Image (tube, rainbow over all chains, first blue to last red; front, side):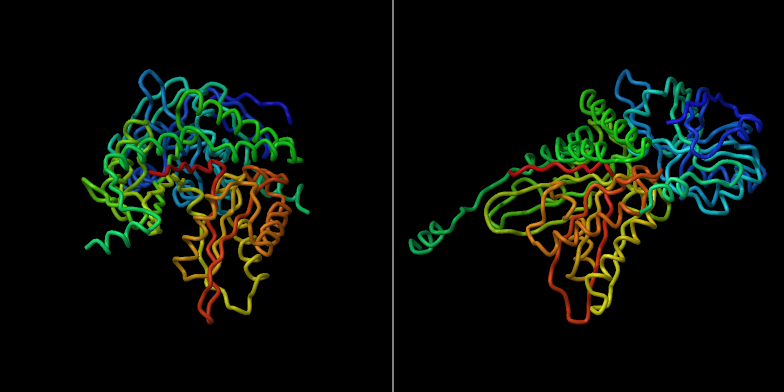
Length: 184
Length: 293
């Protein structure tokens, strides 16, 4: 496997442009979590020209709904959820400065096009390895929509959060490339 | 009166009473166990998959999954944050009398307690408002009445991501076996990386639209790597597995040779006008634990 590239959030356009599909990355810094219901609320805010509950510029949104933390633990299991459900919302968030998304699974072409246009990256973490992924999460705080339970927006501090670049700012897609390589 | 008594005594089983509390306890414990610890057949399939996988990334993913399973088992935490909706499959002996509460209420209470005490995620919501029910109930309960005086309970939490990739179709009888294979292989191609591959592909053939779906789900409870007792189905399973893996999608869809660990088929007769097919794709967190009460 190729060398692991270390990146720190927030991400600059320069860093974003340097990443290529298939790159293995280790992420350090802040991630904001949001999935289905939280995305709907964020877009409602944008529709009403209201402020988002956090400054999204340069940030990565992690598509995750963790399990409750056991007593003494920082967080429960916290692997990625399937990303395509956020496709209707993702381009709007890229438009206002979001630089990265972490999830699993294919994105629609309009989202891939938006990543090229607004310079944003789609990363995949290992789906279903929630207990392992949780080890890279060092601090968690709910910052909005507590009523949504597992879907509340959390601010996470991570170290050595491992992911793969699926879609880069050049329109490449590791799912297609990987499949072509091993197709028989 | 004596005659009736004698007749009953000749039956293979007597009427038996099962306390509803024991059903609650069983469902509660199995909900936690299923989410913390994969069955041996799944772990063995990971080890075999890692060995056979040709892509280095794919091999690394199998290693990560094995490591994840060890953490979950040792620390008693969920292997995946999606601890699923609760599929509870019950084989209820017709000579069982449940005392103290209904079967449905007992199962839901077991889910409620297991998901609270086990720090499992509550994922059930109202379809329109999307408001969370808060305790992962109601469970999806599939009941079959069988002979005997025992209750078999299978607890199989299923993640939303892989369940979303499930489909039922009504093929034409003319489509035949090849039509079924094509539908299943294409379903996997369309599912791609979404259902958390490596996956297990459950296929239900025949019955009716809902029967095919239930057969597909039930087929997932079979031990991975076990041979289908029907040679014709066994051959179809092997052929489909090869065709699915030859697509090259691999673990997590990142490219490789081991997208699916197994294909399981269950078959049932159907109407002369029909050929129903259900596909239920299960993620690598193939969780199912069972008990007989």
